[in-house]
Image 1 (cartoon, rainbow, N blue to C red):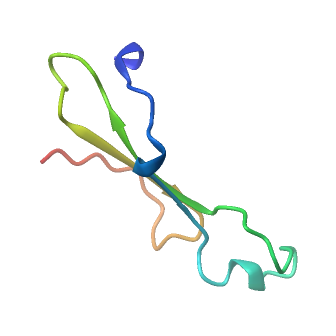
Image 2: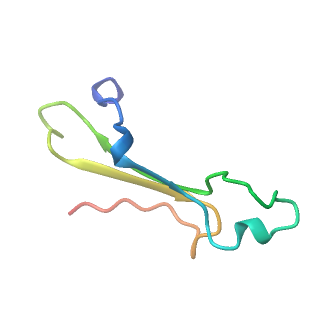
Length: 71
């Protein structure tokens, strides 16, 4: 499956920073370090063609979890 993953397109990636990150005294005032990322992963094979896999990860989220949803 990993060999069938298509290159990730820039327009299918979102990077961000959680609100209040720069208020931490250890973080520079003008920091643009991402603390959140989401992307769409696409697999080019017969079984998964056309099915987007949405990956999300970040710091300071409301909960700590690993989740797989199939719709």
